[in-house]
Image 1 (tube, rainbow, N blue to C red):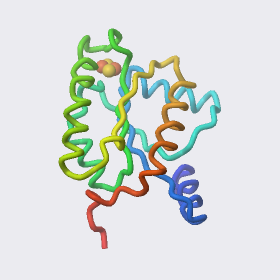
Image 2 (image 1 turned 180 degrees about the vertical axis):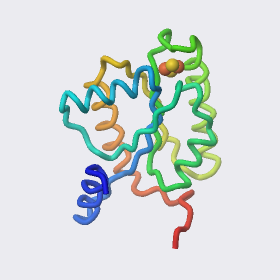
Image 3 (image 1 turned 90 degrees about the horizontal axis):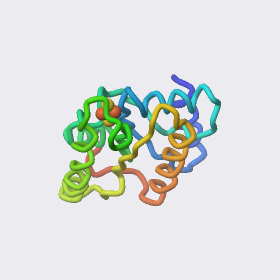
Length: 153
Ligand code: FES
């Protein structure tokens, strides 16, 4: 069991709801930003499981739905700032998908606020930690996501 899993389990044992977040992070910026937050020993909740992707534009809405199906309470997609995408317009594409993904979630009965997008550069470890803190706090009142979670019994 990883350190973060142990922390979440401990919080769950105390009865407090700890949202599980799947974070798709662009490898050129946000993933490096999360690494910077880690090596700089910035304090932030361990609720997010990072998945490194080539570009925020490469995250299909199907990946997002799949994360919810596997039990995520929230999904974050984080990429390079607009204008800084390694593939020129990948993050424009990602930004255009935000509305579509939120509509899709509403359609399947998941609160659209369970999905969030952010722009975090490799130098913004503090911003990454704040994005996670804010998302955790905003997810807590929504409670566990059970609408799409596959039955594992
Ligand atoms: Fe980072 Fe496209 S390479 S968002």
